[in-house]
Length: 395
Ligand code: SF4
Image (cartoon, rainbow, N blue to C red; front, side, top):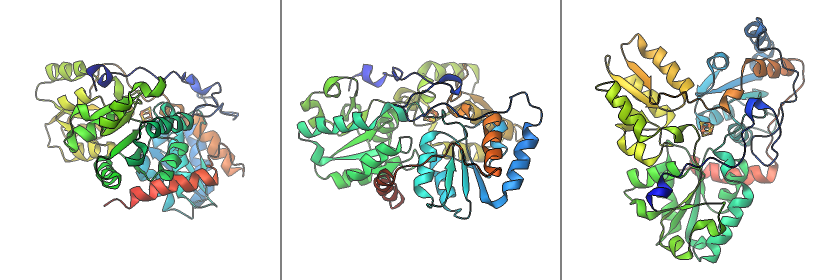
């Protein structure tokens, strides 16, 4: 891999559905929200959400991803990263309705892991994930054909990040692979290389940065062991020889939030805040991760800040809603927490879930109407569950 590939963060060609309007059936983000939403200026929104939640009682379980807005997270029964939330949902079989305040792929995983009787609701169908959209089922099937033609598919095990559509998880399950999270990516890769055997390879989907950072930082590989498969180029932009020599075949996807942090962000914050500890998520680019003091998943970031001594200073490279909440939570313990970059960096798709959408979905459920249900078809769910179950069985 050359340095141009490592730095390549060209945005997805799919347009974002700004403001939750418009339709993009080719993406995992879904379509227009069909609801008759309350006005954002309605002063009774908080009270309405409380009342609807109380009316639903134990029939309702509200999940809130760490990157959600404060106005939404206050109504979450549990908060967490995508995997923790899917597991929390599965552990609540008595809850008839799971309202997932997160993005589309998370609601799909919750649907796969919960019972037939449970209904998973995403308050705004346009809340997707630009990273998940960077790998479609057709593109990945075509890539597998390319690997087959190069004679390497038989010794390649797919590993997909949790942040992928149910279709991609199903592809991974059908082809002997596993899902991973940012917490267990190392174990998932070690397992996958064991399965792949001698001269084995991993096809890592869809986040090139998590794949590269884990392979290089945690498995001791060189950057030259990694190649980037570009689905927008014939043959992925790679020769058969490059595919044969590579150990990690990284899909050319990235997170539009974490991909924004740069080496300049790290240098600038070190100059601005003397003694600062730089703590970043492994979805950041490799040079950012290499320049940081600490690297870890969202849950790791929270645990690190929780254990940090009073008086310590931290610059955190992850989504801004979470960093702001952590800064407020630990301010009175004398911990100074700043955002890694000077520019605002919310996840725009996560932010589509707002109080009007939450109120609308809760009131609809309380009135007996299931709206914005996320339902994965049984065949896809079965194959995706194979990959999810392999992850759950990782040592
Ligand atoms: S933060 Fe990145 S990976 Fe997470 S939902 Fe937003 S775009 Fe997707």
